[in-house]
Image (cartoon, rainbow, N blue to C red):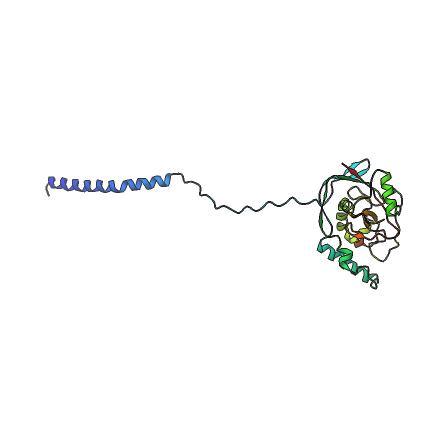
Length: 269
């Protein structure tokens, strides 16, 4: 092959190569740019947003001293007993009645009437109420047993009134917490019959035990007269001779003919 023919062949091959390169190179360059281009962050799938939880109801009071009294601020409170607490109180009472040979009649009969008549419910205080820290007539004195009429007169004379049952129970929330924390030995914190079978356990001077939430003897010593919305009266807090379950703050007690103690409350509007 002479030189002319050789250069002709080389030229044809070179032209073919350039044509092929022209066809392939743009696609290669485009792919290269695609690789180098910044990629947007993929949009995540939306997730379900749960409804916000409601604000928990207070389980303890915020207390402020005012002239020696303890004030409960306005707000929303949860009081009463749950189904579990009703059953627990009933079973505890049954155990005590068998252990102390009080089975005929038993103090625990009619569970729902005795322990289940004050179920969990919400109470709204629209203004502050302030309680005397001690049972009437005051610190270091044996609580005086009075009738509902005498209790009303005592409190009215001092510019206060007999507390409503729900108000009293709100004030006793710290006492209820202390009750549960010391259930194995309640006699450490309150003047009650913590073993059962000793209803004659005597009263003690008000303030003999440490306070709960600034209030003394909310559990035991003398059951305190409270007023219901319908104007009737009942007792709360249990007596010195009350067994554990009957001294719990949510326990409603029937007002006996002998009356009860009183702790006055004062409205702060």
